Image 1 (cartoon, rainbow, N blue to C red):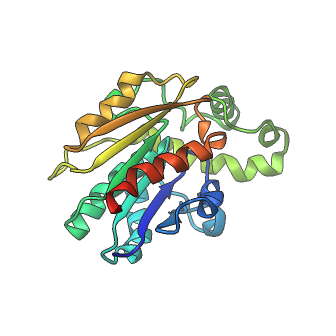
Image 2 (cartoon, one colour; image 1 turned 135 degrees about the vertical axis):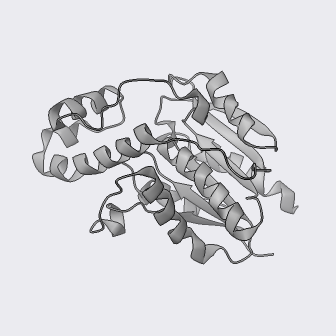
Length: 236
């Protein structure tokens, strides 16, 4: 049996680089595959997505070359959780097999998304102010216009994905275990995280880690431990 391929999806405004360190800490039997979104990192010159449909189709094209019969797992963070969930279904449709495991962090289940006003269409200054209120965006971005010029279109494209996403009924339900992660100081309620359980016939477990919405930056060891615990035990 080949290595487990762990596809990792970033949060809004993020890139594949947030998972760069993971490769040095994951078990040799796990191949970490950070999936880069268009318009950032090594794909900086490519056009940004204009819809979540477009994002999913493009990301699946990035994943397909890795689907060689080896076990597959997915890890998504915030916006990336939605992308990971949709990709899990695309992988199942393509291969006829469920992923081995899906990790969903810092995002409520699709039916529990809190209704707040959309901001992706706002003028730049107002849009940035709203994003800054949510935390996680470095102050340096706002102070330096050259960085702002590069970063704002990416954020706006990602918020378009988030705010226009619709979870349509699937032909078949996933039948794999979910691990859901939340930040102890985030404003997402546990029941909204556990509601992911309705989207799989497998078991869903919930873990709270220290930190706010961006707890990923301070809890790498704990997350690596959970990944090992969840997807290596089945190979023992």
